Length: 293
Image (cartoon, rainbow, N blue to C red; front, side, top):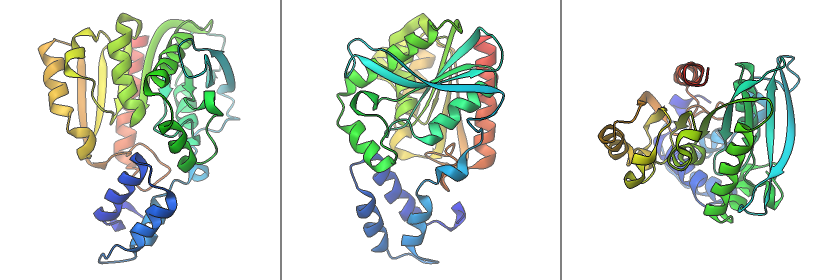
């Protein structure tokens, strides 16, 4: 089912399902109760659920990369330990490094695939699993978002910041560090830009909540900020963020992608906009090459 055939009411319900504790059963039951023209709301809702196997762009067996899971210390985090998906490009390195931060449900197959896409472009990529201290991504997004919601947000962020430090100091890293993330991960990238100062060399948040305007002055990393056009929850803070960045004379570029909804880069559901996602990704890789070398 293509995006054009999905009613906006179903999209709104799906956004609520993704960002609240609504269960899959509740989501589908609520969709079945919707009255819309031109089709079945339940069928549309089922089409929006992710299909990760069909969305893989770079195989874990691709000869251009070498992926592995790694464990590392995370003092002050949820458990003091973390686990992530480290993907090394072919060659001996060292490589500029990019942290890839997941959405609000842990390290799912889409984010692992994004890490592989980053590595194919010549960057050492690490996708941390914020759920690893409590068992790791459980194999489905429904349980994953419940697990992530149960975490102390401050400790979860500490785990992500420790992941950034681990990657920056990795023997295969040049010491130049970028970060990208999606939804929750986009907000985390914005926050890393605030907390890491000059230790972060580039940030690329995708549709992430902006940091507090009072904190924007501490940002030193150049930012490339991606927004969906139809994303009221996230976009509510966009203009205020832009004004604060301008006021503090920060280096940034901000793009809003016409005709897109929240999650337009995620190719596992019909929210995916192929043309706009490709454009955003090309800009992302170009930006990292410019800023990280």
